[in-house]
Image 1 (cartoon, rainbow, N blue to C red):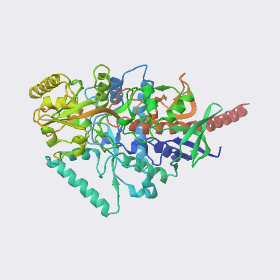
Image 2 (image 1 turned 135 degrees about the horizontal axis):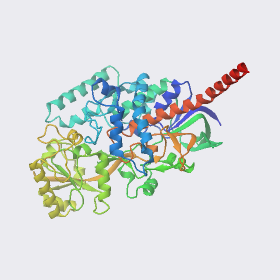
Image 3 (image 1 turned 45 degrees about the horizontal axis):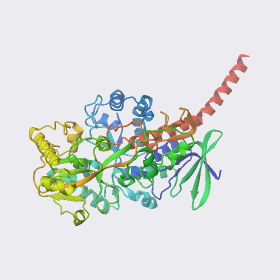
Image 4 (image 1 turned 90 degrees about the vertical axis):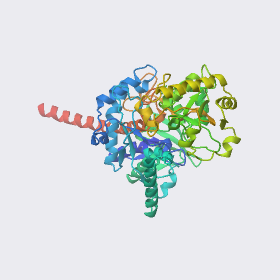
Amino acid sequence: MNETHDFVVIGSGGGSMCAALVMRAAGHSVVILEKTGFVGGTTAQSGGVMWIPNNRFMVQDGVLDSPERARAYLDAIIGDHNDTPGATRARRRAYVEKAPEMLEFLISQGIPFKRMAAWPDYYDAAPGASVPGRTVVAELFDANLLGAWKAKLPPGILPVPAYLDEAMALPKMRHSWASRGILARVLARAIGGKLRGKHLVGAGTALQGRMLHAALKAGTDIRVDTPVEKILIEDGRAAGVLVRKDGAERRIGARLGILINAGGFARNQAMLDRFMPGISTEWTSAGLGDTGEMIEQAERLGAALAQTDMRVCSQIALPPGKIWPRAGLQTEMAKPHCIVVDQSGERYVSEAGSYMDFCAAMVERNKTVPAVPSWMVVDSQYLRRYTLAGLMPGSKIPKSWDETGFLRRGDSLESLASASGIDGARFVATVARFNGFVRAGRDEDFHRGEGAYQRWLGDADAPAPNLGTVEQPPFFAIQVFPGDVSTYGGIVTDESARVLRTDGTPIPGLYATGTSTASVMGRTSPGAGASVGPSFTWGFVAAQHAVRDANAPAALSQNSTLSAHAASATG
């Protein structure tokens, strides 16, 4: 080996710096190897939300929760399936136990968090669900504290120093005094921070900025532009990695273990074609490093893969000129005065449900009726009040939207159907049926708006948060695609985050977390932060296990010495 560390981490996403902090707190050396020029992975470019059951902030705010309630909820929505080995009951139990422990550890390391005041679990009617929600986010962060490392944080999803709930309220500022108050608060925060020489950031940038700052302060060795080409096995144990830096190969040894946290494969078309034919890299908002090499490397070492047909979905539009992130539509589709139809002109799912459910329904529908892409249809009422593919309410429609055909228009439903290639009679009948449901106050087909989460996504200031007629011309339509923020399957790990072979035995010294792995949530998502929370938690668990393993031989040796002394004394 050219050099050796106690712990080697491949990738710098959600769980990497968490694992590094555990190692440094135990007095061990650790190096994080990031193949791109930026630190933080897709987590840094996400909302930065973590789903943490029974967390301290829920207790402080008097929000009911317990390990038993959280397990009951996960058991109800995930179930037990042979094709989801990442989501065994043992793994779910470990997550419920370890996630709040992980959060407490990070707080002890000086990283401040807060609870989102309201972000309901997605399946709020299930046993153990929390309507107030179990979501936790990092406090806003001054990126200037990073010094030269500030340039290594990728651009985030929020251009202003706002929390996610604040950002979600801002589009309503034209007709909501509460939203105007939030805007004033965010602007004051931005101006005040600038006057004090701060660069305040939120969402995933704040989370990973804080993690990077803590990891560097703790003495973690972090290297960018350092791709790992191979995991080295010696005597059946993961002993090091082969990297390539500036064209030269280098072998880096790992005394205690190696953690794979290199993202999923949403940007690897060959892997998508292998595991989920029909899905395109063009639809992803994952980071540029989400290319799957380490999943393939683990498979070559004999690791089991599972749940590889799953993604962390996000229904999107593809407006001209917008490269990243893709224009997310989930909150927009949950608002009144819009529907989504397939290419035949029929609705097939609630527009206001979980992103996982919506995209799964789109892909499933496409097997029998063309539905990829589908059409999001809105009327003039909608455009006056809500955003559309990021366009603020009441704004002038970009010329490029019409020139490229991204936006289709019609002075009548029939003319909109014609412009969109939809069967006119069927489409008109679909809209009439939906409008009838709106007037009756209940969506009889898909129960849109009947859950707390759906209502939370909607417009609380409207007569019905999710239901509004589509009847005021002109009418508009844009295409909807089943996008994602990463994949949701990969390397199978156990409740200690150890990588498992196809026969179920662990590969000694090899751990994995994040979207490199088969998710503990199986084929669903219990709430916001169901990929970031597990990434941090299993990184925490992996480092703890490696530290315990390192201490075990010393303890055994000490016990043997004591036994020998005892035997000598009694002899």
